Image (cartoon, protein in one colour):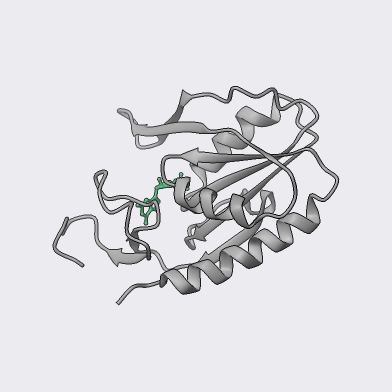
Length: 174
Ligand code: 5GP
């Protein structure tokens, strides 16, 4: 059974889009989905947002170096000048917050009018960036999930729902 069915996700996406549409009415809104995990969420969210807006994409990758702290680097930067624009980062899931924190640092330096985050999912890891996350779709337990854009080794992004798995069982869980 899915953790979050496509109907439950669609209802929540509509609520988020409604709140985002009222918040940014009369603003120069730019959605910045973080590739690749947020692409399906962002596509549904953008179509449910009722105000005029732009979309541009940021692709990040994180890897572990010799130290235990992971590093996040930019694989594909924005093509849009965000100076003076109201930027809303669209993320699939926030776990430790490292990815979103790096993204905020990179974009804050470019002087947007505002910089906020909508994430579909959030895990209960300790972190200190929660003030920047204005909208969260669902709080989930500390489990590995796939579907609706989220992958396991590049697979399962196309599932229309979100399912739990573990990182070790690869493939056998659905
Ligand atoms: P953070 O940097 O907040 O620790 O992790 C965020 C990133 O890790 C997400 O953008 C996503 O790529 C990946 N991630 C974290 N938890 C999960 C999960 O349960 N499933 C999948 N597929 N990716 C996850």
